[in-house]
Length: 357
Image 1: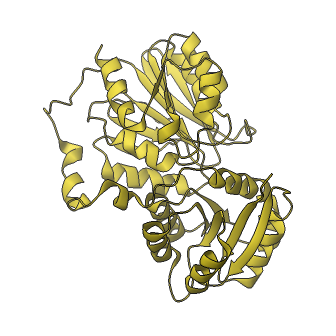
Image 2: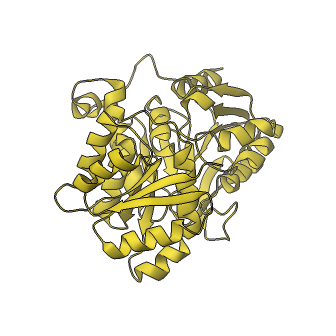
């Protein structure tokens, strides 16, 4: 079996050493080189032809974002970002995912060597997923030139009376995703009108990143999006994002829905776990629910999406061709949990059509 060839790009010699040592623990991975800055990285990519790049965000001479944008325009390849857990780091990492990075690893804030040991399994899994991911270059390149996104989105949140308005009931929409999901979820939410039924989103993401991501979605979508807090009401026109490091469950009291946030043990190695959210939606909303499973590695969400379907919910999986990683949808389909398998661009319309019926 051919090994996955990895090039590590980081200005820290210690970080390059740690990344190489951790990745070398897996027999399917070979670290073929390292580079302290994008200029040397460019030459090593030409010479070594790696399968996957790990890329630091903050580097001298040229920052990781600028290099990523140039790379995805001229030589698209799988990239896993290595980011700091700061507000600026979160914003930059989300921008990197928009530009075409497959996934990211959060650097520990203290004790780099020991902290990285704790996330070694996650690092290896993400590098392996990246190696088999579909790479389409930067989003701006794929979609072509368009007018200023600020001009296109600034008034959308207050739009009313459009043809996209739908009649809502007490339907609950539950969305689960992982690798590639930050952009996939955005695509779905941007198609939702202001009075869309309530949406619960569980995306595999660490603490701090989820709030930054939710705020970013809120600025782009016609519905309101926020990171969930314990006891939040579940309301039409609003989407709640499970906080990194916490499970999110749906609760019902009479006709009122709320969410609970907890730090119970990880499920399927994840907290938040899609299975945890889907199980609670099956229990509390039953047939008044829609379950959507999007791109991601692993099988989180498949088991409880089947529970949702058995409770009468309408269920959708993203198709293989439009997934960055066809892991979670594939497992859900294999489990018999899916009513419809659709390209990403058709999912918002299918949700609205089902609700309008």
